Length: 309
Image (cartoon, rainbow, N blue to C red; front, side, top):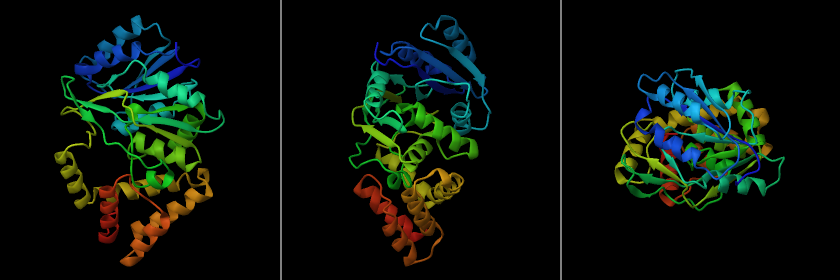
């Protein structure tokens, strides 16, 4: 069945009872071999723990472990899983509590990984199919055509963690980096670290996850004009600048892990963040940092000119 290696699913939960069972059904239906589910529950007060206990009793694909989370937010919850050295597998997949996976999601991801060089950090990710709270399709996430790279990762997260699958080498460098520092979000951090150390990221244009949109989303889809308006307001309020500062700090703590080329790009982005006037634009141009779309790049340059990053 699919991959010949073991897969560890890193599932973060908190009060996810409304949709958790449907997510776990889709995990059990995966066309892959051994699947271990590692859950970090961040203090649920609904029926989440009862649902997990019931699934633990009937899980036959591998291990099913439920751990106590740090209760410091979703990023720290995922960080506790990434850095848990007791979790060993050939592949690692992030998982949210409220999505639905296509039955070949893991098979496609591990198939690509198995075709690459074994000693290189590898990360597979993809678009998602956004669905309503009841599961009605709303349309796919934006299609990004430019090559994934560290210069893109510095200023943009291109895929949700719910689509990501990585090999053992990628998890190892991600765990080392995550032991040193926290991060803005686990998916953006994984993109930055894997590309920063010279690994390869595969972005698949075909969705294999139904990404449920509802009021409880920590981070929603970026497809509607309303969502884009919300993100523009965040830019104007300085959220992008705060994220840039946090990323620069975190990546700085992992500087020795980065390639010389990645360190050079990081240093130039720091000059954009800390510079003044036209020096910011000059540093941005030299850094080669880019976003995936024309509108995104226009906003990047506007943010640099205005001192919003």
